[in-house]
Image (cartoon, rainbow, N blue to C red; front, side, top):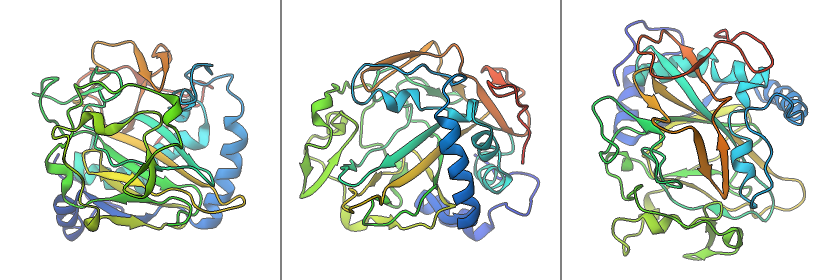
Length: 318
């Protein structure tokens, strides 16, 4: 986690890095104009409907299963492939993680009118659903506290308090309040059915509180920051930072679409010792998964690396 030795137009400044080290996030940052994002999103929406080259098959197993099969569409949708390699993103991430970066996962996060908020949570190894670590940093064991992943959450549509914007609690990235080796039980009946402290909040069919180290602990929501963003803006934050989202209390067609891309240095082992993803009531093979070298070089060879999308387009940095 060192600064990139080569500064570029989009590198974080020393003041920005100091802010990030203290608070665990930086942003909002404009990656695309609203007009550019509008055009991109129209094309992406159309292309994601074609799943003939998607990394994971569509599965009929629980309401939450679509969360899995819409992972990693940057592996087959060209505009998403360009997005994960966009220099406005990767040079800023490199300021924090160093020059050699892998994008190991991307996820859509839609929130439609009436959808609950996402409960407060942290993720380090991403073992929270299956009990099996998905990330292993150098020198860390499966039980130790690592660094998680750097998440870039981009607003593909306008994100407001009304339609369910992202929230974080600054400075909470240094201590895990959850034990990811504990088990959560999946129950699709929980979705859009729970109210916590007066706010409809859930975790895609799980109750994240089952992982709390102290069952009586509660996050200090008075310190929370809510990010209202224009379409095309992003937030960069540690996955170990306490984060959540508000419910979508709007009406009509005012949905919120976020797209998260997750980065680690090339030294990190991804999905160590496993060949599948087990989450949200689904179990999907990693046969077609590969990490993308989003910046720099891979001198470690820990992970399977994609050189082109599943449609045959070469991965080239923007």
